[in-house]
Image 1 (cartoon, protein in one colour):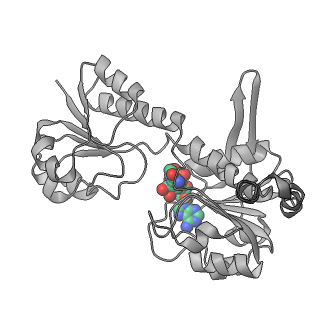
Image 2 (cartoon, rainbow, N blue to C red):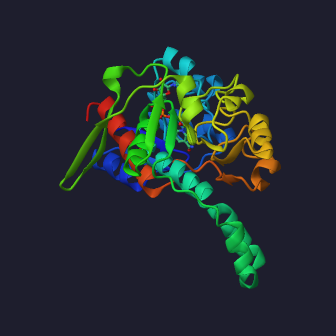
Image 3 (cartoon, helix red, strand yellow):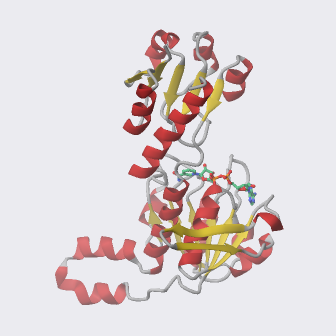
Length: 319
Ligand code: NAD
């Protein structure tokens, strides 16, 4: 019988699927110092980002067949070493794409209608200053007819494009590898409405120069920022930058300079160079709409992650 340890939790839908196949699933938090004692009993360990699975731990688990990451990103796992040892490493990259894409628009709406400011001001100042607050937050912009640049036209980039097209935005994707034949997207496929579109392909410089909103969806792994001072200088005055990919993909010093000088009019950030302690200047900045790395944190994404992982584990064991 297959024994699974889910040390950082797993959605009930995934657990149910595995139970139905007769697998044992123990959902319990095991502290790092106890993992070498507990993990050798299991065929599969499921973690999120909180648990590290390094070489020394892998060496102590000769029966381990799968290390599964509930979510995206394998930086907490020694992937190559595990694979050398014949262990399969899997994650669920597709499960949260729609949730991340919706958060992009939450930030875009927040910035374009000053919602982040309005919310803070109304809580702090109270009803007696309603007229002043209305005045301060009343310079809103519509997203309709604006240009949306998407850097990285993968799973999330495509979901962002769908919503952007639905809002009547001009969508300009740019990717290192997307070719002419790969640029069609299904915008809607629900009920009696089915709509597909083909997008034109664009060069990096064109996207930088024309975007009113520029959103990043590349798997940034550190090093030079994708958007730094040089790229911001090429952008339209008053543009808005959104980063839900990884901290550091946008250079935070360059972003603050551009917001303070008025070159950029706003930013939406879900990820930061320093997590879990982002710079205070970013948190307090009136032109930034912030969220604490919650792109994948929806009920639906969690359920999808549980189901996708359960499917992959069942397929591995031939069930
Ligand atoms: P994906 O692999 O499906 O797509 C990434 C695309 O970026 C690929 O098409 C690739 O060719 C392209 N690309 C890579 N480098 C590029 C560059 N320099 N310029 C242009 N294009 C480039 O990835 P995805 O599933 O869409 O995820 C994108 C990012 O979202 C990842 O960084 C991931 O870590 C992040 N993410 C964040 C959250 C969150 O909670 N905020 C949740 C899930 C994923």
